[in-house]
Image (cartoon, rainbow, N blue to C red; front, side, top):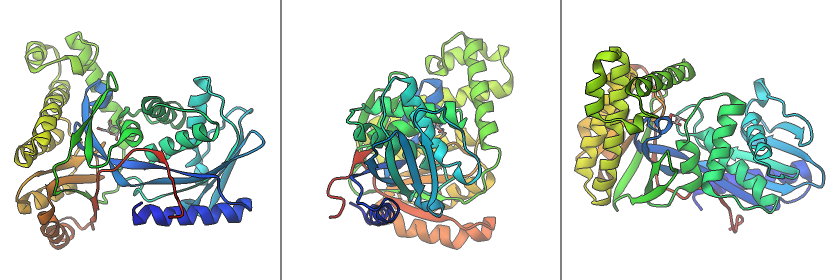
Length: 392
Ligand code: GLA
């Protein structure tokens, strides 16, 4: 158990005892994620290569005798939100907005015909929020696991992920793909996961020994993310429609060239990003599995340029951060990760490069952009699970 999780376990246990006057029956965890390559490909039925990280959300929980769900969020001043499983689910605003991710999971389970019982849950997480590291997916996934486990039910990783996506799409109102919830549910320690977002098949890809996953948060205030995300989705759908394919997953560069005259320049560039990014993601699996960090770096660089020029989802501070890191690494690569318009970059580098990366970011980023970055050196981690021996 990493030290971050240990602190969250202690905090949730303490708040649980104070609130409910007894020890929780069980603890559950689900991680956030970072995507190594394959951006904006998931909702095009394509391929992604994320890994789960050692930052996540912990829940301390016990079943209740009645049909109430009582939630306490440690990270929002122990704010309390509760609802009855027999009443219509209400969407919350303001200081209870966080509870919508939980409510959305309940809705997804009810729609799927799962019988979930009442529960007390105390929640705390350490995934930085709004940074594009999937703090919300980790909350959805840990919630789903908690609700099923305490009701004595098994759930597969893909069912858990689909319920999380449903919570996001149908309850919270964000039109996201399946990547974040799938990796939070099914991550594997020391591995990235190739995920086929059409079949939901996964394949674990070894991250070569001695390689560090370094995440750097640009701390750019993200604005217009939802509307830009939705616009990108529409542009991709338009391109698929023009080419007569179900999704951009089914198109290739030859087809795109054939149909180029029938689409606007923007639509063409959006499609080109997705088509080439799918190819890069599949290639990345092979080179990573072969331990070829140098070729991986080339693919990550090409991915960043494609996100910057064709998909237009990077911002100047992110490009600067990628440039700063790119100049000092001796091997491996760096690119923006996540939905875009701010958020984080990810570097996959030899462990020996970590200090140089930190130093370069600390000495140059603020003077060039006026912003301070936050650096997380992460370990590829397991997906959602019950935490055994929580006190150990
Ligand atoms: C967000 C969404 C994901 C995915 C990425 C972009 O993280 O939640 O489903 O679309 O953006 O790759």
